[in-house]
Length: 402
Image (cartoon, rainbow, N blue to C red; front, top):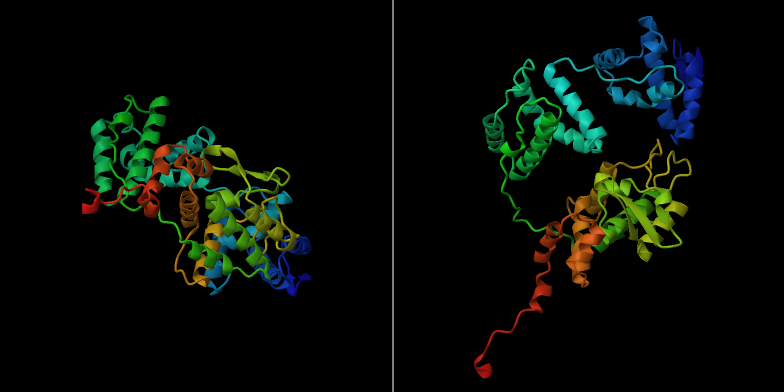
């Protein structure tokens, strides 16, 4: 038996308790949080001992059995496999256990989905979240038509069209647009791979949809209220202020803010590199106020125990880079503090665009800063600033002018 952080660890995980506690300290866990993790290790180790399991036996099915047993015993904390992430990661790095992989695909539909997923990641270079969205959209189509695998080759244009029309009755127009794009991608891939005899991409109907809602940014006083809600005396306040300034001044996406790394900022030239959609890397100017906000955060707010080179780091352990969702949640929290209701990160991208338009920037210049691929995307902002259009309107003729 070994006692670590008040937890008595016995059983197969006993030899790893001390090293795991040291790793948690390195990652920035507080004593209290690390104690909870060691308590979980102690409980898991006793459960493993009762089943005569060794650390190498911690496979996905065994982990799921343990989680179910913990729930059945009435535990209210650490009731999912995700809670074991820190321990499993530590054991993997020691090569005590191998990667926990999902069960292999069992049905023909799952095999088709798996192959399409591999194509999107390896050949198309799509991100994990985008791939997940595509799979969720085309999954019902594959499930319906694959069957035992014989129905795919005989697909017809009517099958494709009828599926999209049926789905459009329950989906929003924008989601139907995304479904059409995903379906074209799948059918193009299937034809190139010889899965289907006919090129069925043209059978996907075009979805005529244009949102009546003009991208709506925040008013300058609302942006100021967001920034003022950040407490500069706290590390989290310095971080959030830097992120909000970057979002509202340069118009980055949440994922681009999360992906910003220390080496992407060229302080001498006043520029930085943005890793955007489609594996693009663009160099943009770094405005003085944005650079100052980031510098203040790096000097006084970024955790010294940061585990990677991301600029914006989680406040709570493990001190690793924020995700895109973390950036969005930070914006939402600032909006609630400022009394503005629910606001997410993309609204600040629109705010940056309308601010540039107000300052006299052309749509071409705005499109370059926002890194739009098509001018039509930027043209929606032409409808936003009505006051700017009034200066172009000729006065109404009066009798004195006749």
